[in-house]
Length: 309
Image (cartoon, rainbow, N blue to C red; front, side):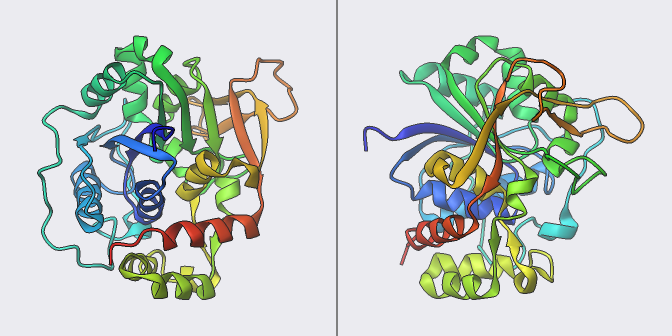
């Protein structure tokens, strides 16, 4: 257990976030030092409530810090049409336990945690990058103590929020630009691998039959877009966790990445220069393909360990 990788999870739960977080909570390779929330899939109060619900459900004692309620300079965007009004519709978690919630905001809490622990830390960012960008700008000294920022975001091709923009980056492209240009080691699981990381009806049935955790996740799945269980649910955020725990399931390239923040049609588009047109030094490791069968096997095995019965 001493060799576990220390991580901070920055998240906006969200149904697929809930699955990714569950696997982190029960991994014997990760030590979650802190969880911070950001507005994204739903507003900041709901994303914070949702992580507290999950921690109570899983009986895990991890501190939580509430983060940014709005993007750096743009209007907030949410995805209630995908994740439901609460962000985790479909399961009754009961009353929220606020005892893990810190008085400090997410940026202060991240800074304090990063500076107090002896080893370097990894930030797992599975929501908009507002909190992470603020941390890097307000406290640039933390860069030397960050091993890597692993994020789900961006796209190699088209978008799922704008024509060319993926949701997490689209929500706060200005924050993404700060993170991409920070000089910190970056690893990116973009939209394209998430589109292949599918859970089909037969997989959902297996998850439901696993344990109490599986029943909860299945209940959320039923509210994750009404057609999802039939056509396959896309496990976007779990791809970032998969990179941390089983990177061999991906094809990975080192390349230059940035984000468009100006223009009429392409704001939020990620520039992932796979053919080196820009002649810029690589600043990120990017997952460009995934072994779908290996991912499915890993996902089911990981969720089977999330047992609280």
